[in-house]
Length: 205
Image (cartoon, rainbow, N blue to C red; front, side, top):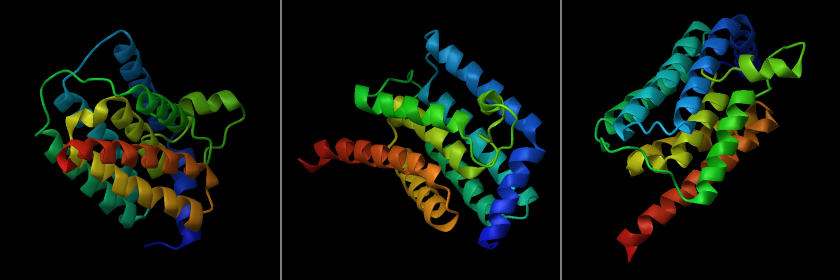
């Protein structure tokens, strides 16, 4: 694994050297959100497969920036999510309970506006050029937001995958990299953990 300064430099480089890709990802995310707001209800299986794409993107940029650790982890995550996604229902997605919906909206918003690492002359630049889809924490924040919003697509294994990786990257970002904004990712991951625990209650009774 690269040292702390190398990791930070790599994240800055990705966020600012590939702005075009960041904009492209924002367009994709905004179009997805717009489609969902006008009551498009994709199958759980389809939406899970779609969220694998930004994970693969993060992996590719990590390899390009000389961070094979992130490259491997995000590739593993994408493969696991894809495998379990193929086992999810083809029924339309369902919204979660209100508290988890609200947490999901917060996480998606935070991930899309993630201000750290991006250099911009205007705060409006974060609306379209923050590094969601390029680097780990904002990407995980957005995806965990969708997982919270749509009842984890009916998949406990997918919840567990994002709990494990979300906790790791949130704690690593705060304690190792000093990016205290990643406390938001910790918040979202804890919310997902609570959702996971509540999903186990019927089986425990």
